[in-house]
Image (tube, rainbow, N blue to C red):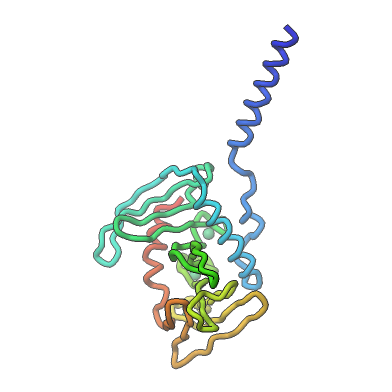
Length: 231
Ligand SMILES: [Ca+2]
Ligand SMILES: [Ca+2]
Ligand SMILES: [Ca+2]
Ligand SMILES: [Ca+2]
């Protein structure tokens, strides 16, 4: 009898542990961040980038919502999925024939997405190690429109590989859709990008490109569709 009781207790203990580990986390790592603060942008960026890596590796995948959307005369399917088991969406996918997927977050907890970690694709370090690279798109004033774009594959030394730890930040500081400011952020430097006749020339891994007028409108189309489906 004593042995049986002991065995039962052991089983009950394992069941309890099992249930406890299946409970959704009470506090997400992003909860500590609170709202978007410009001075903490690098820490916010790093926190979400790491979180996106973890969510992508998660084996949990439950589709919560689906919607037919139309972007530039293309009919696509937008899907929101739960990747951490809390029954709320963290991932979006647009298909067919797109590589558009990413992770979505509500930084200020107003029920609307304001932070997207968006698939950029495979990139390569200087020692030829492939890794998953992603853009960050931020609605920093929570008005439903993206106003910051972060590009992680920047090649300032021109060796044909992304510089480790260097990002380009493109800002719409007056929230009218046009770029007003841009900068590079490195591990220990901050370098403003100059405004050349209304455009900012960004030295990306894949070549230089210009950011200027109406820069955010393409991304805002997907962004507003995601928000219309969320939560
Ligand atoms: Ca979730
Ligand atoms: Ca929000
Ligand atoms: Ca905004
Ligand atoms: Ca602007």
